[in-house]
Length: 486
Ligand code: ARG
Image (cartoon, rainbow, N blue to C red; front, top):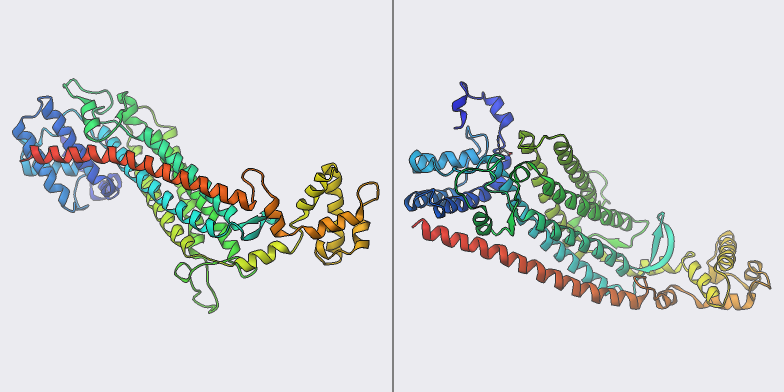
């Protein structure tokens, strides 16, 4: 449709190469709504007559209900929709729709509207998952399990403590998306190809109709920058990295060697050959999909970094990276949420492992500190105790008086008292005595959970308030469209 300057059409292969029409399916609806707002603004500013507006709006309304075929000679959804409007409303009217805009501000608009909606979906999914994790954590505030550093047993912890650590990461993800939304929620529409227009348009009016909190003012910036798009995909890459780490924990904990958790059958895969297998494919795919999303972010940044100011067709290639990232994040959140909701937790095994080994070593050392010993001396004594116990293949509580005496000199600490301290400490006492802020202590778990619950309801409220603003703007626009297309 645009090729009057050019003698020849693109051949089929070249059209395929150039076209974004199949990716554009994801933004079709936004392109139509954006075109309706733009047309209403043209009418409000006397660029379209009432009758012309009516024809354009009603044609767009019909197109909205159709499944637009990707088999078209149009290079993208913007060309396709304009072509359809011209075919149906006639060139005298339809030919006016693209007044005072360009595909450059159009595609920037569509992307922002799409990302805005996807952010809301992702934020809702995050809150759903966080709720599941908190509910599970509530059941396991006293389920002792080993904490690991270097994947070696470190301290006694609780299962809830792990779950709350996931909650906190996800709440930061939520906040990251929520804040990105503010930067996304500005309208580039009316920036034209790059430098604006001499026609009397009102950019604030279209922005308001479409629920944006303002405009991306500078028309060069509005059409050629995609930094907020990169920011959005970066937030997804970070979210997926968090989910991927949780997946890895579950992969480890669900091995026969650990058996801390068991995935429900609905979230496990069999082997084609080994009949006994119950594989954590979904968790592995979460790790694998995270790699793809990180790739998408790198693709976007690489695309942008060498672009001169002003729209370049390179920008078209960003879209599939965005859409794929959105879809991946949403499905990962939904699937992992259900997986956690149906997870079988082997409390007994966790408790048993927590009570074996030398996990209470630091608790013993800290008790010696409470008795007045310098921490370094306490560390040395308990280190020696562990060495002796390890050589004898017994636990610390199984050490007898002579073995205990070997680890400590009289001037350091009384060996008998040390023996009493050792036998008074176990996984449960460790969790009861741990009280520092954010620690594994049982009372701390309960406090952390209460705080997270109130954070969830605050975040939920904020999200709903913001959705209400956007939805009511869009509802008003639809009302206007109905009124003006009659
Ligand atoms: N299909 C293009 C994209 O996705 C739309 C903008 C085309 N603009 C242009 N001047 N060729 O980016």
